[in-house]
Length: 127
Image 1 (cartoon, one colour):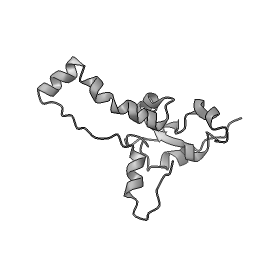
Image 2: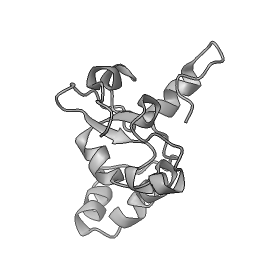
Image 3: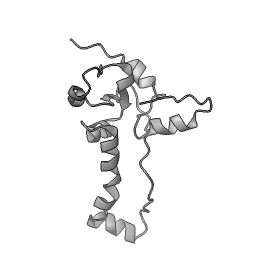
Image 4: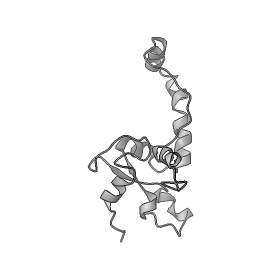
């Protein structure tokens, strides 16, 4: 039998924001994501997949897209989005008419920005 998840605690980990995109989410909107995906737990049998450190507050869009990927695998997937969008006629048209602008930036998750902002030298999260 699994451990009962404290949704309030997970929701407040990043001040009511999605750990990945940073969007503000209510506790009702929040989905609890397993940072290290549940189905990969056989690779780390000592890992308690439901421990608080492995649970991340996530918006539905991020959780559904991340699905069962490890964060670094998902980051690589996200980095391919621009090249895929460029093949789309509507996206290309919006670019040509100046409605969109592409910025080539690395994918940085919201929780990683919080780690960088800490001034005490102690990271908010260390995954």
